[in-house]
Length: 285
Image 1 (tube, rainbow, N blue to C red):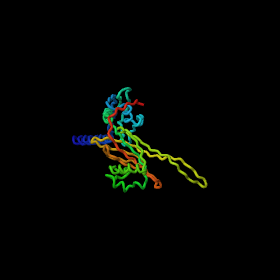
Image 2: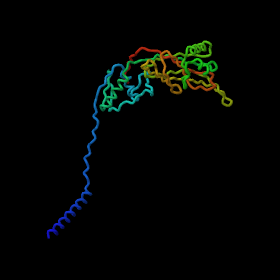
Image 3: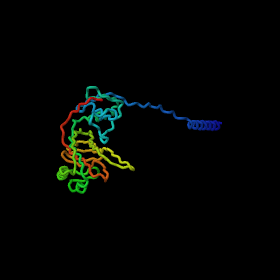
Image 4: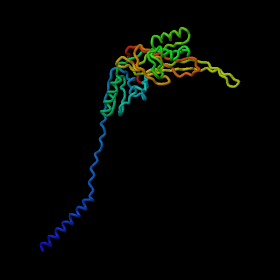
C-alpha cells in the first residue's frame, strides 16, 4: 500500500514539473524601461579678442552672412568650417561675440577666433602688366633667362636678365607696360584688371561692320605669409595656381589664353614687398 502511494506521489510531482517547465517556455521576459536621451546642455559665453575689427572677424567666421569689408575677400581655399553653434552675434562697439552652444562647440569657436585674431600683416604687391609682341619673346627664350620654369600659368621666376630684357622691349617699342600697385592683407584677396579697347572690322555678305570691343584680363591674388618668412601666393587667372615665394622675388604669370592670331603675349609681373602692420577700422554691416 505504501509503495502504491509513493508511486502515485512521484508521478504527480513529475507531471507538475513538466507542466511548469512548459509554462516557463512561454513566459515573456519584461522589457526594460527606455532611458530617455539627455540633450547636450546649451551654454552662453562671450568671447573677446584683441586685434581684428568686428566687421572683418564676422566676415571670416561667416562669409555667407556678413559682407566683406571693401577689398577683403577670403579665398575659398582658406575658408574653414565653423563649429555647430545654436547662435552667435557680435556686440555693438566691442571686439566681442556672444555665442550659444554646447561646451565642445564653444571650445572650437574659441580656437577659431584665436586663429583669426592676429596682427594684420600686409603685402605691398608690385604689379606690372606686359603686352609683348609674340616674336619678341617666346617660351624658349624665357627658359634660358629664368631660374625655374614650372608648369601651369606661372611662366617664370624672374631673374635680373629677364627683367632687363622686358625693360629693353618697352624702350624699343616691342612691348607696353602698365603699372599697378595693391596692398593686400594677409589671407585676404584682391583682383586687378587690365582693359584695352579694340576695333574690329568684319564683313558679312556685302556689308562691312566696325565693332568696338574691349579686351580684359584679370588676376586675383591671395597671399598667406608663412612663419619662415616665405609667402604662399594663390593666383587665379584662367586657372588657379599656387607659388611659394619670398619678398623681392618676381613671378611672370601668363595673363590668359590668347588666340594664335593675336600678335601679342600678355603677362603679369608680380613682385611682393613687405608692408607695415595695419589696423583696419570698418563698421559692421
